[in-house]
Length: 121
Image 1 (spheres, one colour):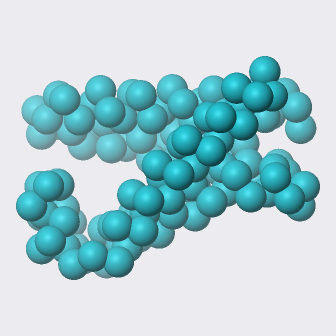
Image 2 (cartoon, rainbow, N blue to C red):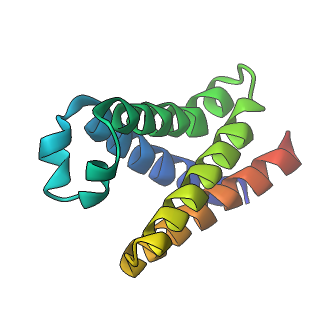
């Protein structure tokens, strides 16, 4: 189980970290080409979402790896699960149904990490 959790932490941590870097460093106009949802939010809100994903992605890996406040790893996973629920609600309201599938995949992955690491904490 520990190996599966580490694989999930690394994969999902990398995915959220990279997505967070992209959303927090690129101009909203550039992001809008592939992510039309950014047009419904201010540049500051898009950056906040990016920073949240970036910190969550880091939180999936570093606290548990370093053994410094390892409880932060499952907390980061729960926080990212909440972000994915909110994203799925947005996509549902805008009839962007394929986006919900991606949100569900990410939600399931971070929920697995949260469950496994809360049991081990």
